[in-house]
Amino acid sequence: KNYKIAVIAGDGIGKEVVPEGQRVVEAAARRFGFSVDWTEFDWNCDYYARHGRMMPEDGVEQVRGADAIFLGAVGWPTVPDHISTWDLILKLRRELGLYVALRPARLLKGIVSPLAGRTAKDIDFVIVRENSEGEYSAAGGLLYEGTSEEMVIQESVFSKRAIDRILRYAFDLARTRRKKVSLATKSNGIKIAMPYWDARFAAIAREYPDVAHDKFHIDILTAHFVVHPDWFDVVVGSNLFGDILSDLGPAVAGSIGIAPSGNIDPSRTNPSMFEPVHGSAPDIAGQGIANPIGQIWAAAMMLEHLGELEAAKAIETAIESVIGGNGPRTRDLGGNAATVEAGKAIAEALA
Ligand code: NAI
Ligand code: MG
Image 1 (cartoon, rainbow, N blue to C red):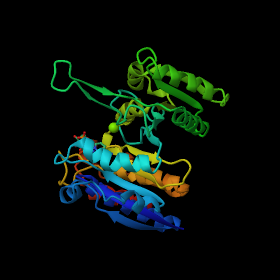
Image 2: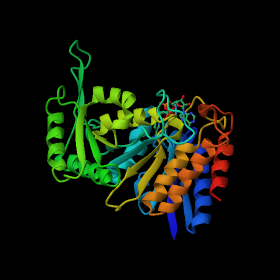
Image 3: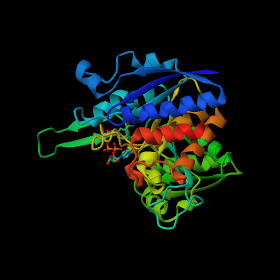
Image 4: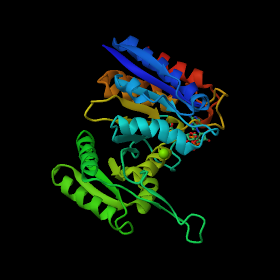
């Protein structure tokens, strides 16, 4: 099989870790007998400096025919983050209908959780974030500008269609795992939207009598992630709650530099997009010291989505054999290896 992959390395360490992800995919391709055509797109904040936009007007159409999109990180201090994010990542997510953001939080062998005493058996859950609407809306505006009453109104939008499909995705996913779904809510404070989420959750849960379910307000849920990570299997939430949880989850599972993420169109009409959780890390960019594992694990998620299950599993095993053994570790994991050394070691472990 041959896969067409659109590559957007983006900014900062995105440009350093993406080649390591590609190196590992190539090693997996040789071992498992598939091939990959990479098409690279230089859409980033430098592109913005030249063109006044993050990608061409028909950018979405240029990647629509790919089998998947492999993204590094987008954002640089020269461009306001809300512009670089909305004009590229959010545009791709929305126009391609990538309505599920999937983030595993799993403690790998060889990684020490910042939670004292926690081992791999305690931390293995997945965050399913609604990725298409909700709190991240452009509805609202500035009122009474320049007066003492100046204010902004920002609307949240929650449709039954979007809530139900993300909840069903979470329950379907739980069926392939330990059969439990937890909802992030805030129905005590957000008094219209969140009781509605609770009601839809109860309704969808009735379609899955074999899957256990519970719900927590977002504030206490963040505390439980830290104190009782072993309670969770699949955690589902709105765009904002899911965003917060999807940084916290990987953090309890070690370094932000190792966490992967998928933006998925479950209908498979359009290419899904895979990226590390971290951003462009301007503070360490250009030094060749970024951890490539988030990008490499994202590559494994991409291959799993494409149906290369053995290759995906083998990449995860290779990551664990390198960091769980005496392999090179980058600084964030307490070593002093370069990005390239860490990437090469994982590719070699696959051969
Ligand atoms: P960040 O993830 O880039 O950095 C946060 C901290 O983690 C920094 O100290 C950084 O050095 C460290 N870090 C991140 N990835 C690492 C890695 N692979 N290895 C070792 N250390 C790593 O988040 P920050 O600073 O909030 O954002 C920087 C830029 O990235 C902003 O422009 C932001 O908008 C963008 N960003 C883009 C994302 C994306 O493309 N999906 C996601 C998050 C941020
Ligand atoms: Mg985030």
